[in-house]
Image (cartoon, one colour):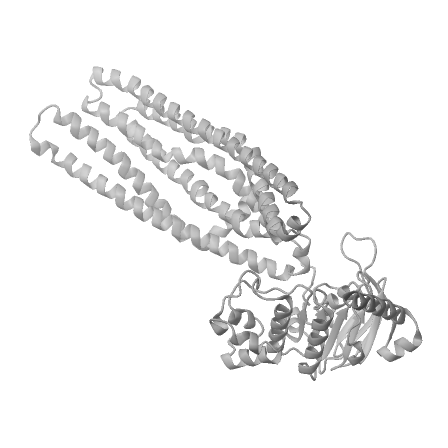
Length: 583
């Protein structure tokens, strides 16, 4: 119930439009009932061969209600869908605003396909809540009340007979349908989300599946999930069929009950015989207001389950806490790290422990060490992708936690091992770094990272479509494009987290020299487990098992003969061995 009420709360901003749609829906059904009633009266009365003058009102009524039904139905559909689409758009924006504080740490624990399902399929499911669940009951109550008054004005028994049928069809049957559809309704939403997640993972890992010959096993997994999803849909379809069949029985029985009550009234003279067809057809037409309630009962549980999934995501506590009050901005960009420790949620072992480090402004520093040693964790804390709980990080003398995340993200840029290339144009990808950049600025940025020749070969220049995640580009070109994007942003602190892990040694060397050459007067933090061109760094910090093992320049560390020197010797031996193999 709490989830249902929260979903209803979104309608506050569109209540006027919903009232208009509700009134139009009511007028549509009134016209349908009026059309059936006046048509029945006209045909029945005309059979008595009266003067045409006595039929004029009925003839005009048939025309009015016939035209009015079509006009009101069109306006009702226009109004209800307009309101519904606006509500769904507002919900999507609301969900996106809620997601922003969770990124990136808050959604890393979720599958990307699951988040995608929430943003698309689950929100689309709410369309049924606002169109098929909220409006129909109110319309049904208004029509039922009006018809009860009309029938009771002819005879109270007629009103009671009609009301009994409407209560069974519009009250009891939807409750039964709601109970029958609860479990399959939940299962449809859950299996749909699971299928979306699995399909997304399969598409992302198609290459690996083919290489390892695992496509058959993955196909079986998808078929099993799809089969369960189909079974849940079939269960809902059976419930829907049962509801439709029962409603047909209820309508027919109500009409028969009304006839059984009306015929004695006609015989006794208490009801004009012409009205027998009128009350019968008006009774059947009035159930147009009741029919949607059966489908409403079936749509409630899927909508609520979709709402639960949405709120489970949006109610998550942000990993990064914004400060309650702003502080003065730092005068410089010196970084001081003291006794820093961090442990990922639900992981017993700390990722880093007792890190103490000073990084003066405009320093070029490398974090090196074996994979899993804590290098990426440290730079993610520096970039405020996670918040530390023990120790401190200061920027220009101010605690990083006390600065707004927007301030940190505007001054610290980060290039990861697998940077995102939007499935869009080259221009759009570059403008992520600097919005509304001129063509000259964008081209200059490309030339700075030595993509000038590549750019000249593009068919449509800056408006060239790059394909799915830059599918037409090499790994090195994608990395250089992302560096160009970073340079356009022009942040004073630039972090490179394993940006060359997927490149060969020569390309890695070129990219590092490129970064050091164009990123002057900036703090450069280079994270790597491959020791290439590190003699250009002001300082090297060797991190292993979550701790700083040693630090210094490359020559100092090699002379020391410690962790770095051994690591250096192993890598050089591997490189020499591979060079000999190539020879």
